Length: 221
Image (tube, rainbow, N blue to C red):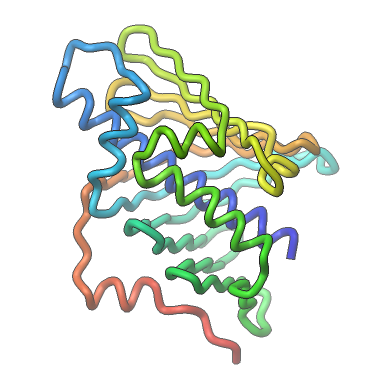
């Protein structure tokens, strides 16, 4: 179960990173020569209809000598629908659809229903605040450190409260102008996850049929 909780955290961090890139694009469009600000980025995040992207995730685990690399795709439709699929090194599917969460990997067996798990729910609620563009609420749950030099910017988020703060030390997002370059999540046990993105689409509008198909929850066999 702890592995699934970590996966929820990582997936929402990815979605937050993509929305932040959308915010950077909106800020750059409004004031092309201006230095990015956290306020401008958050305002842009609140306006998206949906985001999707491919990702390459490199996870360094303290107990392993070699990092694990994962390829996949993330789709997020505000305010609370997210699907994370992977195709390498194995296939898996995590779906968060409102108050229901489920996961299935390629190992076989039944889907794991996380909906009733209070820790999973707390993680989702903590990450959802990233997506609504409310800077005051963001500061309630995270200690944000934003810096910018010219078009290059960085945002470090440190969770303030249990249970997120018990697992995650920091989430760092780095970009240049409207381009998100890198996301790093550092856990207290020394594990580090670094993600790069490709084929990013922001302001993606999904039809009701697409939403029904994309966010269909894995069912137990």
